[in-house]
Length: 247
Image 1: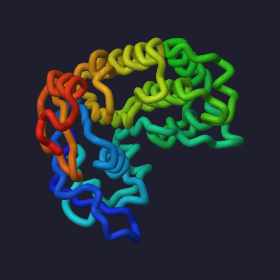
Image 2: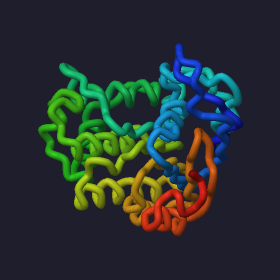
Image 3: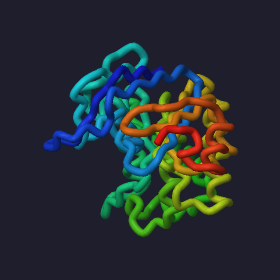
Image 4: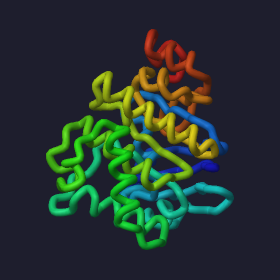
């Protein structure tokens, strides 16, 4: 699904490298979790895979389903089936949630979207996520609570049906009940789409109790320093990063 080969990444107009000779391989149907101290490059990794303009790949390559996507645009990556659930979703005044989602779905699919079928899918998704129907007509993320913003990211996922799901701290700002709802919807999506892959970035192992990872990776100094399973995440929660000699 995804092969990241020895990439070095820096911020545009800044010589400092954030990712340094970073490599990662994700097969179809796998769930990978990335953990690590603040400032080690976890969110940079997510945005780089998605093609954020602020980050420049100065070496290495990103291969998605055997195609080199290192230098293609964000919208092209989205059309290929890559989705980023953002840590802090952007608020856009004057564009309703339904307008945004219908436009995004049309752009990704390349087809005109039947309004009746779209509204039906929207309502089903919102019911699954326990979201109020009023959110259909509210400006995108404007005035949404932290939990509503994160649920809205998962609503987008359910409608756009990506192949590679990147979740950048999707658990932050969620209470226990909301976390369960979000994870249930992600797991349901993965059951319906067994070839879909997930790359989760998180600080806390709690979400990994709900969405079981095949691999847990520890990042330090812009690259993966150690790989294990859920037990590695639990050890970090108990003893900290110093306990596994990555700092």
